[in-house]
Image (cartoon, rainbow, N blue to C red):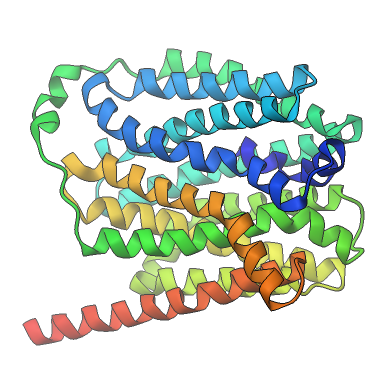
Length: 370
């Protein structure tokens, strides 16, 4: 969650380096790009080395890159390199952290376990958002001191994660990775989710300034609310999945879209926070659903690779979002945070409708089979 929590520093970093908002947003989104090759490669590598060592290397990369920005007055090229290294670590961490789950859980329990992991990640995100708001008062670079928390995490992982017997995965290494149309659908969904999520992270601080909703710390406090909702949704996900069943995905996407629209058009601080509340509920439900259903749609040999593919798609969307959405915004009107948020909300509508249509087609197929 740390690469997300530091997004509140974007407005100050723009002034510090005297660059355009789009350029600085792209730099802060760079970890989502470099996470793509590492997330794809690490899935295949872990089948030979096990998941423990690559996971620790990924955390170490995030630690070193974050502290480099915090401790040194890096030139623009330096922060670009640091962000790129951070993304390499992020790709390893995101993929393997959840890639462990299919090894130990199946079916509905798998989705529940992924939601619990997301809940604890959001606990960390809430702490980092609060910490980032405090550190920001001392300068935007000081926000990166939060990465020092990765040091004890490496030690804890080394002690607590079980030693893997690589010989047990020999048959899996020989197996071929198999994908299907379900995986393609989930990748398409994740792309639009990632696009809107990146818009929220890159433009929240600018929106607060442009709409005079408060000082820059408001964006960090809003992220705290976002993650707090994610914690709650993570722990009640199992109940939600039982209640809404197949409809849980389109409902979650719709809630996320409404939240984005409220945030983008907020003229009062409470509307901005309400939008954060709804969008946080939506995305905290969408991601465990997609990750569990996509991994269940393939065999055990392909599960980790599918998770890495989902995260690769998510990260590609996050990286292209600033340039793509800002270009569209300039074409429509002007490059404002409000227009960007509205673009994000509107882009979620067709994917929500397609998810509903997919459920209808699946039910129709079952009826025909019967």
